[in-house]
Length: 431
Image (tube, rainbow, N blue to C red; front, side, top):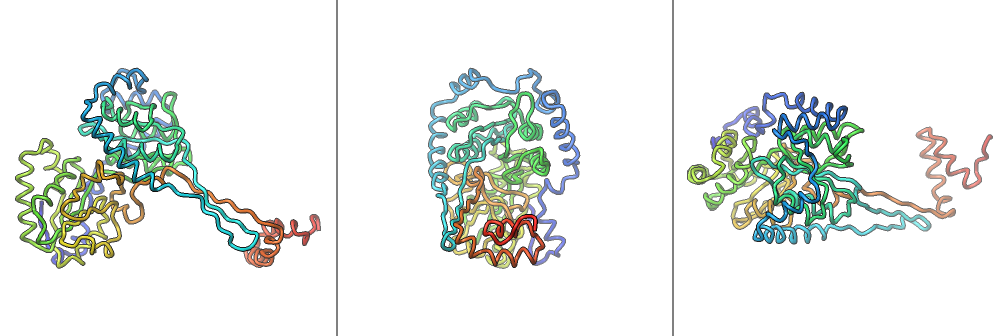
C-alpha cells in the first residue's frame, strides 16, 4: 500500500486519498444500468433472459429453481458445512430476536391515547452476490431477519448457477422462491416483476457498483421498490497504534482486499514503523493467498495514512465513514466516544472483521461509499414498518380545540379546523 503523511497533504490531496475506486471509475455505470433497468421494466422476461445470456452466459432459459432442484442441491452440501451454517444461524437469530420491539402506548393527556406499532413488510427481495465468491453468509444476514420479522413473501436472487450452500442457507431461513439471476438485472426484475419473477416491496443485499446503482435507480421510481441501503464494494479502515500486531492488521486488510478489485482498505496509524511492518506482512500474506490477483488490484487503490495521534485517526475515520472499522489499539473501547460514522466497529486484537461477516451475530450488510454517515447497519427494523394509532374522547378533543383553531388559522387550513369544530357543535355546515 502507498503510505502518506496526513499533515503533509493539502485538502484536495486528502480528499483524493479517501476516494473510493468505484466512485472514481470512468465507466458509465449509470448509463449501462439505466438501459438494463428500463428494458426489464418494459420487456420483462424477454429482456431478463437476454441479459442473463449476455452477462451470466446462461442460455437454458431457466430462471427459477424448482422444488426438486432445491432439494437435490441441498443434498450435496457437506454435513460439516451444514453444521457451520447452522451455528452461524443460531447466533445471528439470537441477536436479531433481541431486536423485536413491543408496541408503545402513551397517554399524552387525559383521554388521548397514542400508540406505535410495527408489522412486517409483506414482500421482500434478497440479493446474494455469487460469482467467484458465493456469499452464503449473506443469505443468513438477510434471510434470518426476514424470517423473524414475519415477511410473508421472500424472494432470493443470486448469479447462476446458485451455489448449493446458498440454497441450503436459504432453506433454513424458510426461503423457497430462488432465482438464477445476478447483477443489475436481478434488482430490476425484483423491483418491477416479470412473468416469472415476483415483484417485491423492498430489496436487500450488497453487490458491486452495478448492483448498487440499480438499487439507487429503482428506489427513486415509485413503480419500483424501496431499498435497504447503498451497499456496494466492500471496504475496511483499520486504526492501529504502535502496539498492534502487524500480522493481525495485515490479515484484516487482506480479508477485505480479497473481496474484489474495486474493494478498498485503509490503514490509519500514528506509527510509521507499524505501517512499514504491515506492508511487509501484506507482501508475505499476499504470496500465499488464493485470490492474490484480486487482492493486488484492490491494494493499488488502498492507503496507509500516518497521523499525529488517535484523535486525528478518529477524525480521518469519521471523514471516510467506513463500512467496517477495526480498532487495533491498546484501549480500543476508549475511542468509541470520538467515532461517529461507521457501519460496524470491531474492537481489539481478538475481534477480526471476519467474525462479523460470518458468525458473531451482528449483521454484515452495511453502508459503503461513505453512506455510514446517514445509514445504519442492517437490522430487524429494516424488515418492518412503523405506524401510529391515536384515539380521543370527546372531552379530550374539546381541550385541543382552541390549540387546533389557532394553528389552522395560522396555516389557513379551514377544512382541518372544521373537522374539529363540527364534531363539537361549534360550526354549522352551510353557514
